[in-house]
Length: 137
Ligand code: THU
Image (cartoon, rainbow, N blue to C red; front, side, top):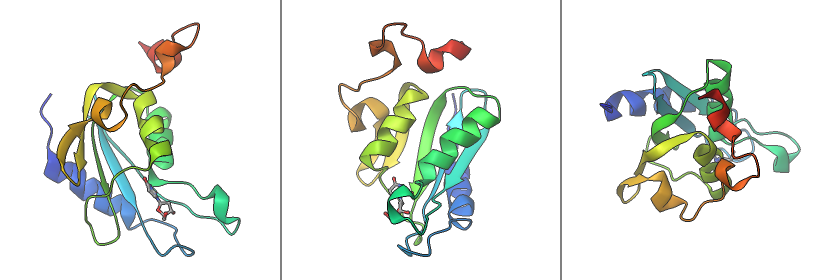
């Protein structure tokens, strides 16, 4: 599947501009290409109860499911300066759940796969029923 990184970057920047980050002053935007060709995105949404703030990737996976599900093929995340940002550890796990095998990420050290940034990941197939995000087919 053809990946238009410029389009993904633009979607991540647009998402970042909607961030609600009054506490960290660190807006984040994330965008991903889905296996059916659509683009989903999300921004971080913080909270006065600091610890419950939501990362941009939380909004992205919610957007994915709200708009029809599917598997993520490519991912781009930016900070407020529009520079590439690595997804935090928890967010790598969130992304893994919905990733197509070999999902590509723009990283601070070039394009990598989800398997490279989350090696030996725990995922849906490790559970007894093995379904998870595969339930949608
Ligand atoms: N943040 C994200 O949105 N995604 C990441 O992968 C890294 C961190 C947010 C959380 C918080 O609102 C701000 O960046 C500073 O940590």
